[in-house]
Each structure stands twice: as C-alpha cells, then as structure tokens.
Image 1 (cartoon, rainbow, N blue to C red):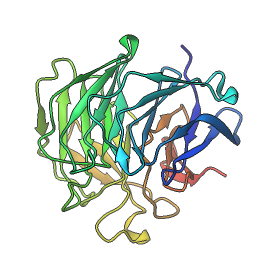
Image 2: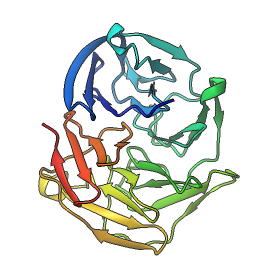
Image 3: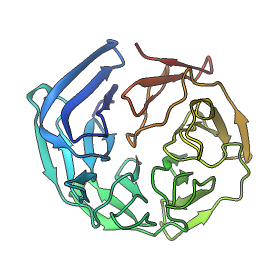
Length: 275
C-alpha cells in the first residue's frame, strides 16, 4: 500500500460532514462533504493509506464508534463502519505501528481515564491493553524506533501534565513513567513525531494559561540521551487536534484547532503555515 501524503482534518467543534484535504505532493487544498457526520472531539489517524475516525461525542455523550473513510474514493464520501472500541471516549491520543492502532487515555464522559486499547486492523477487532499510570486526555502519542509507544503531557481533570510514559509494544506488559526532565512545562493538546533515529519533535499546545505567547514553542526530545532541546517557534501560538501528524521527506505536518496546517522542516529546522 503506497504512502498517502494527504493531511486530513475537520473542525472538532462539530459535528461536521466536511473533510478538509491537503495533498502534500500537489500542494492542493480542498474541502469535500462526506456522508458520515464526524463527531465532536473525535480522533483520526491515517493507517497504510486508510483514514480511521475513532470515538468522539454525539448528543453530549461519548461514543465507541470506529469509521474508515475510503481515501481513494474520498470524493464519493464513502465510509465503512468498523468494530466499536471497548469503551466510549473522546480526546484520546492515537498512534500506530505496522499492525495496530493504539488508543491512549481520553475522557469517558464522567472522568479523564487511564484506559488504553488497540485496534487490530487486519482483524477489525479491538483489545484492551495495559492502563496508563496517570489519567490523561489530549496528550501526544507516538511510536519510537518501532519498539516503544510514548505518551507525553495531557490533562487529568485537575491539572496539565508534564510527565512521560512509555510501553514496550513487543510485550505490552505495562506502562512506565520515564524519568526525564524536559522544558515542555505542563501541556495538553500537543503533538509529536519521530524525525530521526534519536529525536521526537514536539509542538507544545496549551498550558494552564492558554495564552498565545505560551503556545508557540517546539522542542526536540532526544529519547536516547534523555535531552530536551528548545527548537524553532511556530509562527502563531496554537493547540493541536487529536489527528495524528503526517510525515514526508520534507517535513512533518500538524493540524491545529482551526484546521491550519503547520509544517516542520526537518532539514531547515523551522515552521511554516501551509497556505
């Protein structure tokens, strides 16, 4: 399956039936209607060229739904209902390896949760996996070196978090708190992606002040040498949707809460907004 170099987004304040598409190769943006109404605060991820929209809120209540939107026929608005998640929730983080989509934390309608599960794509089936040590929603989640799943920051219902947890995806026995000092501060609605063999780029999102000047930073986390380095600032302060970033040879593409696309150039180490 070829890599789909399309950034897909939607307004989380929905529900909405409009999907925004940016083609990285052709540099073309468009918005198209789809037949499936995307719930509020749902999370999305592109897995092997397939877009999955998972969970969210309908009628004020969290839902379990998993939908696949057919990207090759996206103009036809085709979507397929897949197996439901084990638990209804929203504002969960998603990431994937070559076989699974991991669903991390979130809010279950009553409280922020430690709940984690994985979607076995080729079986169209969900399984519970180990719970986090700390409740967290709107955290960043990413796979590192095809071996470890990390989650960073988030909100636990009382405070923004600066902690990091990781789990070995080969054995999936437990989450461990990572003993690493960072300069991120306490953050939620942030996103991250591996950019080289050692480092993750993190766009910081909101802190407890939720002021623009506090939300423009980005950091490189060196997970091998346990270092955190301040990197280039974004052009505007923002927070990020729970839609997983897309990586190309040129950079990493993140989507903010207003569906603006922020591109991080790996070689030039700078940010720009895709016009």
